[in-house]
Structures are given as structure tokens and as C-alpha cells.
Length: 111
Image 1 (cartoon, helix red, strand yellow):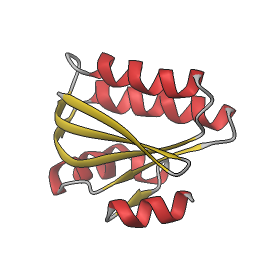
Image 2 (cartoon, rainbow, N blue to C red):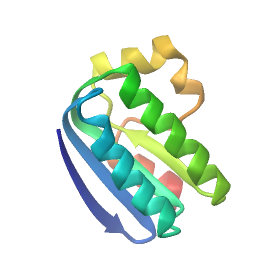
Image 3 (cartoon, one colour):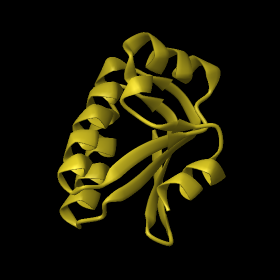
Image 4 (cartoon, rainbow, N blue to C red):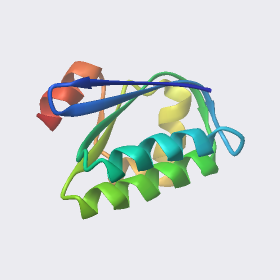
């Protein structure tokens, strides 16, 4: 899996490419923990190029959401492909995370 980070105004954008599973979830966990430790409260996870997510990936996102909540911050997701979106729907995570159709919508909502 490939993880890219950039900052747009006050929002940290983490773009994921590939598969988020037990073998790769540690990378994302490290990236998100670094943002928490830096006190960065607003994060957008851009899933445009995320092909697959397992329960391990969901667990990392849930743990991060709890950490950002402690900072009075938020984490949002954007551009989920149909397969990934279905995993979020089945697991009930669509009620935990704000999910936006486009990156631009998410940035506007987090601003």
C-alpha cells in the first residue's frame, strides 16, 4: 500500500493507494498517530485509489477517530469506491465516519 500526505490549509490529507489489510494497516496507523502526536486535529482520508479494506484497516481508522476526538478534531473519508463503501456500510462504519463523494466536498466540510 502507498500512503501520501499533504496539507491543504488546516486539513491534513492522507491518500491511500492499494490494499489496506493486516499487512499494511501498521503503516496507516503510524501515519495517523504521527498526526495525533503533532496535534493536527483535522484529517481527510482520501480513498480514491484504495482497492480493498479489511477489518484490520477498519480497526486502525476507528482507533484514529477516537484519538482525533480527544483532540476535539475530526477525521473524514472521501471518494470510496463501491467495494470499499460496501464494507463500510456492512460494518456500520458509515454512521461513525463522515463520508463524502469528493475530496473537495470533504475539504469544504472540514474547513
